[in-house]
Length: 571
Image 1 (cartoon, rainbow, N blue to C red):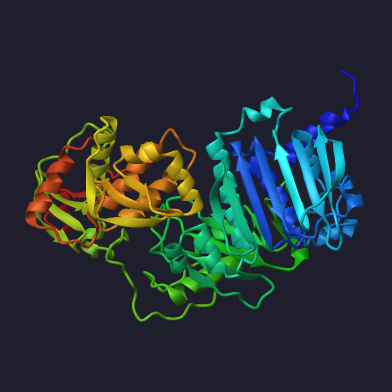
Image 2: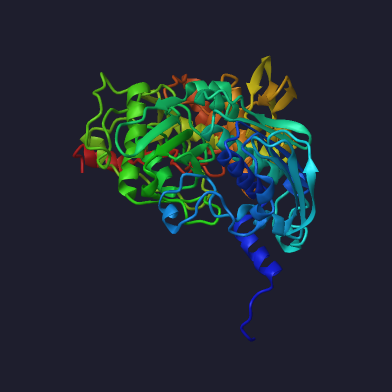
């Protein structure tokens, strides 16, 4: 085929594909333009998941009448003028690609009025070209209305998720900017119903309460900014508050919401030794550094950044988080990991070990340490021998005698396995046992949690949760699965909503059952009666896979008679 120039409309669609991936991409670009224009109030409206209609209105500086059409030309921008300006980007947008990219894949109308002018300018663009222009009365600021997104790109439409899933992404995006800019008032309507709002008071914790919920926001620990060139601030959760995924972790670099594996790794290293394996913290962390030390021009949507001194940023985030935890939260150990900060943390009076934890117990004495544990069998149908309970160790491990030696059973892991298989079978038979609460629990949900609730109400009911509306983003929880302890029904519901909100339809039900089993299982530190120990062992013997918990941890360790004789020098 001969080499030739692409037609302008084809080139425009290709360029738009780099910037506009889905409806949330449009919202991101328009919200960033509004923030760059100095807006103090931003209202977003969504219909049909954002495909049918997206409207973003702000009270910012507006666009002068003679610049409106120019703003829809590719690479037209008011934010940079020289190549040297790329070395220190101070605005969220700067490429001049947002408006022309949106106009290339949708019908776009703009009504804008610049500060100090009497009337507003209205333009309508179809297929990237101005189809209508005029003067209209309007308040200062800008309103951009996007209709029929990807109407000329059906191939792009088929890759979008459901309207609910696309709206979920928009809710998530708006909450991020509300946390980054607590002084700006955000409102979001989805299908005519309020989905999110923030006050714009400037109080960071108040913005967190709107993004999460009041109870969670109150529990977060403040990260105090330091004095170095890399200043880290924000809020992180205490070790007692965690999630099953990283969806509640947000990073803002010079107030720009970014995705960064490096920053996530630094945050999690700050929690090293404090969180159970597989658990993730909640965090809204701000990283401030000189503009020339960060490159924001490495990704078309500006979602990723590159740091000039990556190691310095990593250490600053890790140490700031670690110090916040050591100062404000009880921890299991005061010692920093070997690869953490060189400056030792403040000494703790004594290590803190929560009563309800999966933390490993202190090491066994030398006589037992070298005893090999029997590997878990590979055949799930292998049954356990009949075991006779003898007692407990540290109120965490059941000691039992079997035909060939001694077994140490992790009471929590064993009960998790029993409950998981019971829940899975009940769910398969559509007969999950429920437990009504004596008093309904009031639950305030975050915007994302409420969207998930609306989308997965049938699945929640199938697992035994019964909820009814009780005000704005508030519900009454009246019943829970019988396997769940009544002492923590709200916490369990939040975790289930988080799991249901993840895009993992294949294993979603099993992971929900994992969560319910974990919450309902006997905890470490609980004293068990002999009858309770015997009942746990009988149930474990009937399990399909009794040797591991649903997360893969062993439920027991076997010390054979031969091992005992060897340790005591009898052979």
